[in-house]
Image (cartoon, rainbow, N blue to C red):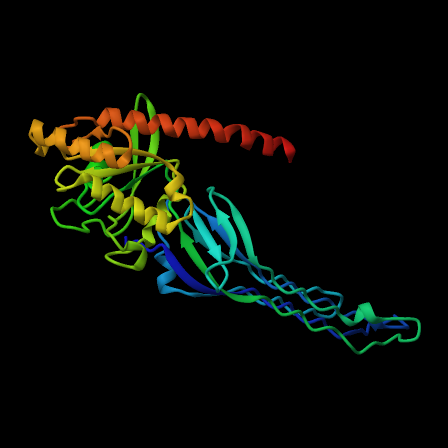
Amino acid sequence: MKFLDQAKVYIRSGNGGAGSVSFRREKFIEFGGPDGGDGGRGGDVWLEVVDGLNTLIDYRYQQHFKAQTGVHGMGRNMTGAKGADIMLKVPVGTQVYEEDNETLICDLTQVGQRFRLAAGGNGGFGNQHFKTSTNQAPRRANPGLDGQEMWVWLRLKLIADAGLVGLPNAGKSTFLAAVTAAKPKIADYPFTTLHPGLGVARIDAREFVIADIPGLIEGAHEGVGIGDRFLGHVERTRVLLHLVSAQEENPGKAYKTVRAELEAYGHGLADKVEIVALSQVDTLDPDARKKKVALLKRAAGRAPILLSAATREGVEETLRALMGEVQASRAEAEPAETDDRWAK
């Protein structure tokens, strides 16, 4: 399945049905009268979060969605049927923006969550509503109200506990494959990862979700390389694992390059808790390892974890460090969620 994290779609709710102009003409009833029914309400356009989706690829092949018009009213006071709603199914983490792609309409973060994007138009009144003491036979009825129409942007931001960042070929995909059941593409050339990937890691009988995104290079915020468009997928994470390859000539410079791109992107990424690891250390001899650890420590302001997904060196230490930050973040969030629940 191809990965698509942004799509523009056109939606239109249904028009309301028109009211009816009708009169009773029944045997043995001396005086008839108006009996025109009301029009039915137009269908609504809904969004629903479903399990099992992790892409918006369905909206590449269909971009127009229109709900059904309400049925017109009929005689004998019969109200028209409501138009059928239309449901757009989206993955967890989908955000909806107005046509300007800046104004947020809703943020859907839980399976089963629903949101009405456009309400259908009300049905028109039949002529029975216009009968008065001076107008016993009204010959007017209201048309139904028009539905709403708009273009909206659907933007997917994956929900994960930890995010992997670093330059291309920093060992992010290798680490993800080593600690989860995910099978990302791994090769010895830059930009092997072309779209984000998710995996579930397990340590000490606890689990958390890791997100891997394509590597960043200098100037990514200006569109260089793949750019920073996939950084949105680690906006929701609780902690970042910054991998710096031991094969870099200057690990400190590589670290600062990625940090500069995170700061240029904004959205709070530069303020997230960060764990720094020197990856692929199995390729270094003891002297080279000591030198590069010192360079990275000076740039990051802390001692990095020594990591090798190939030999499993430092893997458990890294997972425990990530799990510790995830647990701490979850503990902070729980009281706020409890308070909100009781407030309702």
